[in-house]
Amino acid sequence: MWDKGEKLLLKDKHLGPLVKKYGHCRIKPSKKQDYFTDLVESILSQQLSGKAAATIFGRVRVGLGGEVSPAKILKTKDAKFRSWGLSRQKTSYIKDLAKRVERGELNLKKLDTLSDEDVIAKLVAVKGIGRWTAEMFLMFTLARQDVFPVDDLGIRNGVKKMFGKALDARKVGQLADTWKPFRTLASWYIWESLDNR
Image 1: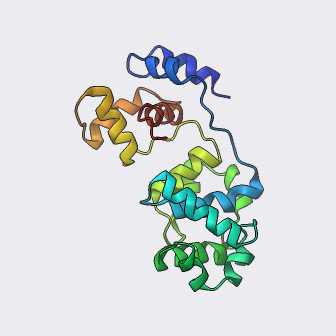
Image 2: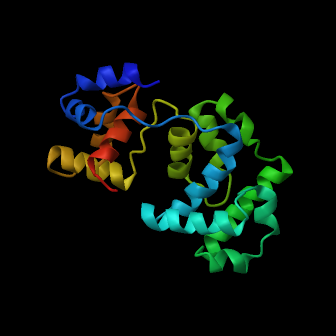
Image 3: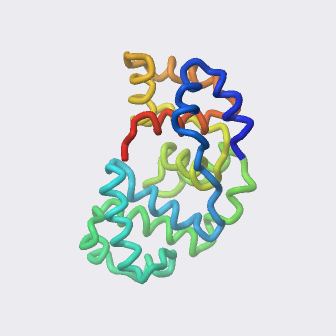
């Protein structure tokens, strides 16, 4: 699904070498039944290293019996989530998400039919979901092709590595404009360049 974008970015003096080095982009759309789980994982990942987030999410998944669903989250006591490593705040965020989905206020299965900005508007109405989390959902769950999270720390660090100096958000945004309509792909290669494994 990314072939056209990869061909285009190969011609870019900054990204071309990264496309050659890291090969094909591995982002692909999630199944609709995984949208809720993806959002819970995104909320848990906020302000944590990838490794710490994966550990906590793993505990939550096991603790919920392997199924991360609105019903299971709502039935589980806050103290359990705390014992799995969630802060009080993040517990309240995933419970707010679960309530909205259970009540039908947020129809996750229809998100893939909306524009990027409409998806963001629906998601940021949930407590604890800001623009960054909504952008991650667009990129990694819906596999939308033209999302660029200008405020993401990894993007800022990757651009700094690319240019040998930090650029302000406006300059980073202008740079990203040259990668339209494949800014998601550009973001992925920038993240890969940080080798955060």
